Length: 84
Length: 299
Image (cartoon, rainbow over all chains, first blue to last red; front, top):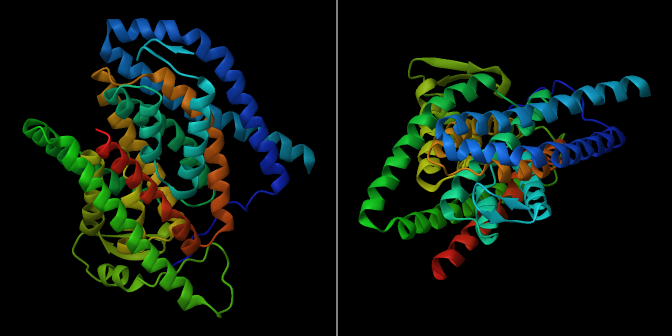
């Protein structure tokens, strides 16, 4: 079977651990701040309009997925640039 | 923590830990992790209709992080993924129709459960046989780099690649020069059929099909499957949310753990060869089969 060509080399253990630590800190802050205040308004939407709830639910999940990934990538670039 | 949408009181630490474990598996094996997430939410007291929808919503978020990470490593074949989305959507719609038909007979839980168990055990047994044969055939030979893939079942994918039923496509990312569009569509249709019939992303069947039938290297199959699961799970989430079956707050909390776990799982694929990833995959379908058998016996 063929071998794929990686676009970037595997990260070092140190940079990978920093990345994971940043990711964990970000999701913790997000969890404490955002989700706590979001609950009631999302519940109201769920009760009032299922169609809009579906749009908002999917948007929140996609936004959280891309948002966390984007933030980590940017932060890692800064860390790597400073360590070089 | 109280989750008012599903009316459940669930410890958020439990959800984060469950999400983390599923994230590691998902990032490493390219599966959605429904076979673990479903029972974990059910045990936490969530009604079954919310289990199915909420699990799909959490899969969307987890697959985004993992698929993007795989993309930076060159493990996502975009052309293959978009072709597969077509087959998956058609297959999952037909699978869902099958469920509706079974609902009318009142035997849906038993029939789906038994089918699931048979498929999961068959996938595990076949992968165990193939992987051990591949690893034995490589014993004593010079060590290959972790990303170099090989399979004792490779002659099947080569035979399928020789069927040039038009239109044909080339998949440079997967290293496939020419393959019939219809073969890709058929493989993704089968994956979609299982997804619609049995729920979840059905990565446990799609990933092996991509490796053994299409001849996609394991690393690329994992990354491409995650991308494809992201699209098909989004469709499923929207559909279930419209029916009121998604507690998005539970899914968002689970995803905070899954996001971290997926990063670790994806990074892990770089240090293992294709057959070793497949070997580690073998117990996963068996765990799922065990959980279903337990549920069928305690129903």
